[in-house]
Image (tube, rainbow, N blue to C red; front, top):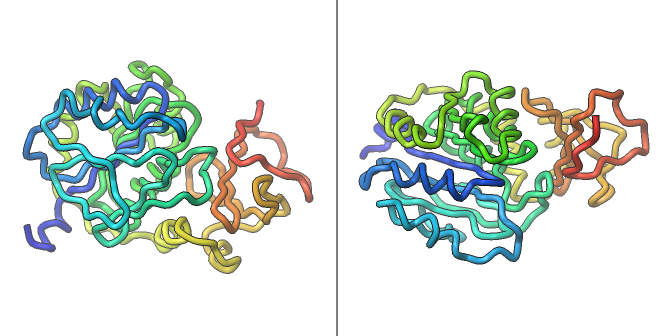
Length: 281
């Protein structure tokens, strides 16, 4: 396919799941055809010491080849790539990046980082699929995909083992296609045959995806957020509030990300937010 053809079609599928994800991912992959014309890349939250059987378990029912993403490896359509345990997985010019950098809301690999990276590099060609899970890792990334004109799909919370994550995704991106796991494969087949709009990628999304891979400079963080008097409990550095239409979130120089889910007044100076802590209402 020519480069111009790729730009007109949706050919990058990213999926994120947490609690209860194995069964849902198995169902979706089983429904995809052998010649599926898109790359499928998956983050499934697991403990750092989890076994490496995920590939074998997901591969039992699918016609597509599944492999662990490798540093610098190229991704191809018709294949499924998995984020290795305890490593962030992002895109870079047709290749994968694997990093052990700061956790995002206690998650590594982070769904947000994968989704944000896909939005930054592939724009409206991206299809983001947010599945069962707790809390909100993946919601900010879903917002980024929506903003670049990509298509967003969310599992129906009524079918989820852990409905909190898909509910948060629907709240943040109400235009998402909401459906059951058994119907998601058909939605993806339809999506990859539809043209992608030529939306520009906002500079803020590009920049945040770039600094996910390194230490950010203060002037860069000033371009994506607003500096606060709050400090990061993980590294002690200052925090920037990042307004992107999703859950209120903060980030520091090193990429630790924190969130506050309470509606109480902003933290007082010198206070600290625990990165990834869910604050009581």
